Length: 232
Image (cartoon, rainbow, N blue to C red; front, side, top):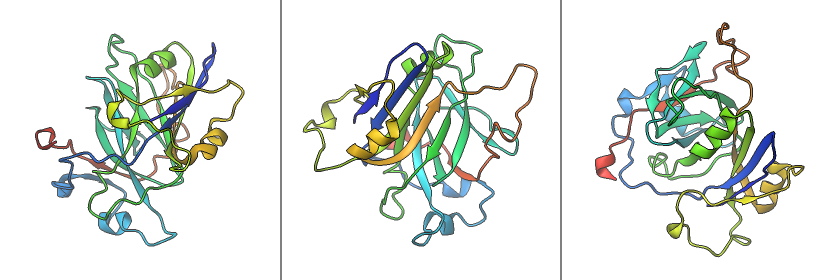
């Protein structure tokens, strides 16, 4: 896994490679208990026809103890500890609320995740092949300090992939790009962009609520209950 990033006083732009990970033990069990937001037929959505609406499965990772909540109905869901699993609509941007960041009590961060494209997992194994969106401690701290972090998650081109096994990596590998570079354009030269993670942008004021523009109009999504780690 790789990511490109720029480093300066005001911005940190990163491009992150995420392969098609297989997460043993993650199944669609307990799907009847999944929270379905504005979706009446989950099976129809997840098995959408070609060129139809598709919901890409993602796994949001964060430092231990960090909680994540998605925006819904003009507010945020109850926070829950990462990792969290969602199915997000392709072509749509979602707002999240991140709390309980290590060593930062009471501090909140409001990243967005934009889904650009989809993967093609076997039907019924979408969670096992969920695209990983990682909120690293370093990125969260950078956002809290006032920097802006952008990651472009992409599937690597097999013809130009780095000849390095991901099995030996700790976390997600990365490398820097110039501050003036367009991370999406660079990602397209290396593979197929799937999602964009932005951290450190706009945040609501202390005395204002969450307006729908800030919440990106709360687009529909699927939220899955915690997966059985004992089965991993």
